[in-house]
Length: 173
Image (tube, rainbow, N blue to C red):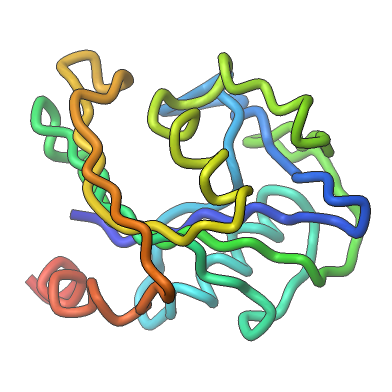
């Protein structure tokens, strides 16, 4: 179980920044920006680092809005299983740049290419964009792409400490 983050920048025109992944797991799918925590890193620090590495944008951890906590379960390939916090970021600096991993695109809500996103993202991202905050498990099928089951709960606040005990076990064995 890997600890991960996912960030969706939203600009003053209410456009969302998505990246088309260019290589690796999930290649050619659109997603937010994120990845795995490094040793000694907080979820927020990870989110800000990954955003910069994948898009060129700079942000501050305190400006992240935590909107979801998901337990992504891959029962047919446990190495893909991870917990992740999802953030919106409305205050940032820098210029969006394509990287070797991501091709970023600013999109209006109506332009989001849900058909080119992860199966689960198609279901929960619209809910987050409506202002809901979510938590819960998302269980993927045998193909490690389609969703077999989602049991998401709407919450008032996403507590970023919920997964810390499980993450400590992952990092420290």
